[in-house]
Length: 186
Image 1 (cartoon, one colour):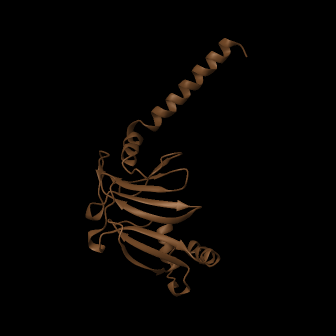
Image 2: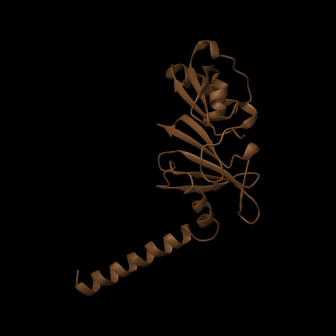
Image 3: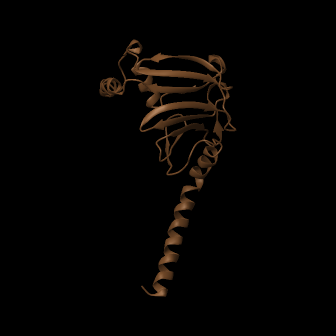
């Protein structure tokens, strides 16, 4: 490859990279990413943005974690209940490990009506059994009740915004299915 060809190729690559960067950070996406950057723990590497109902924005990163927030028609950040602006769902190997709620500044913010609940952590105790339960729930699109907390499949710990443990207990596979499908909203 000649020096002119290498130079032309380098310029073409630079143009394509710049065009892609401008598309990602232009218009709505740029605004959404500026909001996402307020949540310091959220890694934006390999992000994908999707819009949901009620002006909800979902940003999924390459690790599978999801940052959820709402905007109005002018793309201004809105809050959920009790001033919560962001819900950060952290996944490990495809399974929800925890979620936390944050205010407009990206600071931990609990739900005032539920003892300042701000963080919920999940620990899967019986993965094989959970897989079987999820097959049933997925088949029914989650539209069935499964009251199996007594089977000790998923253990949860809930904390307030000061990181004080509020409660810990086993929950049903259905409750975890809802959380794993990021259906929680304050």
